[in-house]
Amino acid sequence: MTSDKVAPPGVDTTRPSIARVYDYYLGGKDNFAVDREAAQMAMQVTPDGPEAGRACRAFLRRSVRYLAAEAGIRQFLDLGSGLPTRGNVHEIAHQVDPDARVVYVDNDPMALAHGRALLADARTTTVVGADVRQPDELLAEMRDRKLIDFDQPVGLLLLAILHHLHDDDDPAGVARRLIDALPTGSYLAISHFYDPGETQPEVSAKARAVEKVFNETLGTGRWRTRDEILGFFGDLELIPPGLVPLAEWHPDGEEDTRQTATYHTIVGGVARKV
Ligand SMILES: C[S@@+](CC[C@H](N)C(=O)[O-])C[C@H]1O[C@@H](n2cnc3c(N)ncnc32)[C@H](O)[C@@H]1O
Picture 1 (cartoon, rainbow, N blue to C red):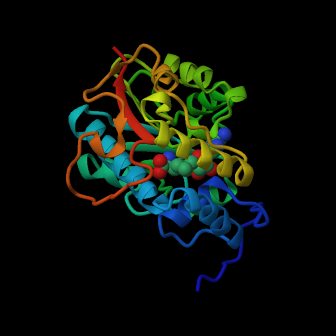
Picture 2 (tube, rainbow, N blue to C red):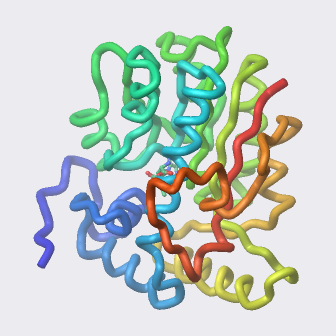
């Protein structure tokens, strides 16, 4: 049986949070009964929630490794970074270059408290509390605190975050503001809930059903069309194989993520600013 730990200040344990529900899917301990209930409700529609979470983390690992090892990226801006877990961005980047810099950004009090305790170090890694829906303020803080050098290529990570922005939050506008700030040679990685629509009607129906549960419990979660998700990359150049189910992006055979119900409803891609 899981026993709830004491919540850090500012953490509301009466309402589920995205960061903590995701932590539950990943087998973490930074979640409360209300988060587990929300996760279980979604799992009644898509029982492979934990596998989907692991597939998201495996995509994060492969895309960060690609950016560090193949693309030579040495500074990462990870927006909606979540609670610390196995295989954090700086750990992957540091396997390639121990001096690679990572800025973790989230707006969840639990993710920030645990992130500051476990992720931040004085030399290469910083945890910042900010709202992705206010990209200009966020970028100004990066510049003012000299956390990111916007004269050097940046690895911008929007992993499992844009689908938690409502259409009214203008996620395309948010992505555009962020991309505009990046110098040539930068990269953007996105993973996103996907609704295949008419091309796969049964999968689409499942996406709609779980979208309903997410919105009733967490208040967010949008399964967008391929064109909507591609639009977030703006005019960046997608690296082959393009926008694909997570497991199909540069598979390395390292992790067994047997997504079933969600295989075709979460996609990812990486693109370069040329
Ligand atoms: C599903 S988790 C993804 C974690 C990590 N990026 C990954 O792919 O494994 C989404 C994270 O985005 C954060 N988030 C949601 N809305 C946000 C916002 N408006 N500003 C900053 N962070 C946000 C949540 O708190 C959560 O930690």
